[in-house]
Image (cartoon, rainbow, N blue to C red; front, side, top):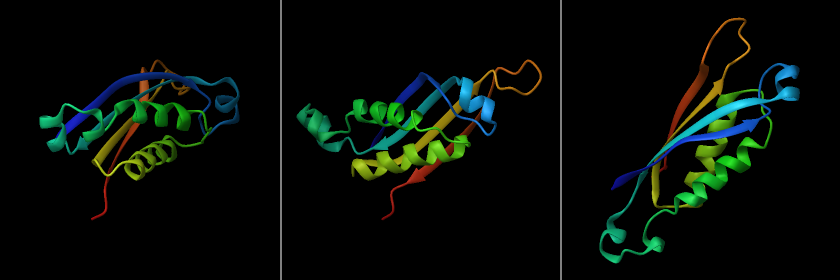
Length: 120
């Protein structure tokens, strides 16, 4: 068992509770941490024996294109899709940050983090 980390995926997207946020869009940063079964890959050096993190990146890009009011909703969709796609992924943590949120002051980001485990 090991971890695959994909850090600081920067995406411009149209998420937010307020109509203006969904109209003008904003910058988001997504981070993934996945517990993955590496056992077979240790010996084989074969991509088919691990989880191809390009697939996770593609899920993030696809799900970030689907507008949502809540970051929680997007993060769950990302986690759920990745867990469903590969039995190699045992657990995933998804962190999404909205950069420069419209809070009326100077705030670098707001964000959420969720963790989903494969059901046994």
